[in-house]
Image: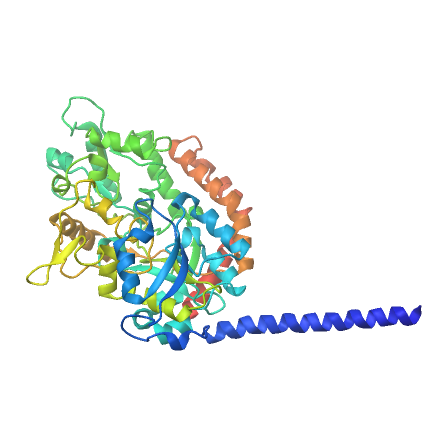
Amino acid sequence: MMKEKLLYLFIGLLLFVVLAACSDNSTDSVAENNEEGASSDSAEEVNTEGFPIVDEEITLSLIAPGTGMEDWENMETLQEYADMTNIQFNYDTPPMADFQTKLNLAFASGDIADIIFAAGSTDFTPGMEVDYGQQGVLVPLEGLIDEYAPNIKKLLDENPDIEKSITTVDGHIYSLPRISQGDFGAVWYRGPMWYNGRWLDELGVEELPKTIDEFYDLLVRFRDEDPNGNGEADEIPLIDVQMESTRPWLLGAFGLKEWGIDEVDGEVRYTPITENYQAYLEFMNKLYDENLLDHETFSQADEQKKAKGQENRIGVFPDYFSFFTTGETEEESMNNPMYYPLTSEWTSEPLLPESPGLNRGTFAITNNNEHPEASIRWVDYFYSPEGNKFLNMGPEGVMWEEGENGEIVELEVPSQFESSEDWRGTITPDYGISTPTLAQPIEGKEVSEFTQFVQAETDEKYVPYSEVPFPLVYLTQEEQEELNAIEVDLQSYVEQMEAKFITGVEPISNWDAYVSTIENMNIERYIEIHQEAYDRWAES
């Protein structure tokens, strides 16, 4: 009996050693694969330049969020590109509202498509990149980029901050970003704030406010001097919905770049517990008390805001373009100037938050993909000027043709479409989702007078004063879990208290109790995690 027990024990130990060795070999295999950048047996079949990408046709699978404008297999851009590259696709494009659920289920089942396309960092989060990258489900891209993606490689070589912002904590790149350069959309953190130009004309205002006090004085004039000329005191000087769009612009007047984590000279802080933020709340409470801020700010929807704008009842308002709120034509809206950043005792220099100019998670290759080299070559084209043009406007002869002097001549929109954008959404996937590309002004494309106006306003009033609040960083899985646990209560509490302080439901005199509550939510560790992530980013 004792001999049998010893025999079973020996066999058990032997199995344990064998399994452990297999596990180590598997882990080492994934690690080695990650270090080498994943080269497949199909590498020699790929043409390293020009088209087609492969001589023998291949078929890949792709998952992406669909906008519902057209089935992807029917889009002229993708049909033409398949002919150019010799790469066909099976598309899985669930509606945008269902995409994250479908993507999560695909990861969980292991039946994930060869390519994840245009997911964006909201649905395909940085945490998912880290997690599935370290599990070996996502293929590291840096080695593939070095050998097969000259446009992406050039971009990263020339922009080290972009490379730092897409490199995860284990040193690998698991997804590519959409990068915007060269126009107003590349720097805007949110849609801007605009002044009602008709009201400025009515009151004879020739110079926009440059300080917080001048801003207050103009809002008072909007309230008291009947700028809409209807003889009623129905003017709303300042309006927003939940402060989501106006807050980033006004915080700058108090020396803050973000409502949450920002960085100043390498030091990370949580802005909602700073004295600067307290001063912001006091100012906004003053506007609310004096009927200078719409009393429905925290209860209305965007449709209500726009309705008030179309009634010519609002003086300063946020929107991507001002005519979205006012209902004016593009030409009429060029009379609405963009807000100029304000100074105060808290900041002697104008300050606005700047977009980092990229959205991560727009292209990834999974371990089911037997042709990673061809896949990276396929997407690399979109990071060139001609590839961006092709992705954005489709092939020549569909929406546009080349004029005698090389200019782009846009063709007439078919009668079944209400606008050229609706038409474009049926021709290319680069519509309403974050596609992998280097988005930039397209050479030869006519720039409208309205676009020139918006660009000029941006160049004058935004670009010189904007700073990225906090770089795009990656967290370890443990760090992300800690942050998630803290944020559950923290974010909700800060949102509720902002509304209460501004509306006066909670007096500003309770500020110390508010700060104490946040400190008890482990805010020190929350800041520390972001500081460590920032330091990694800065030193990488």
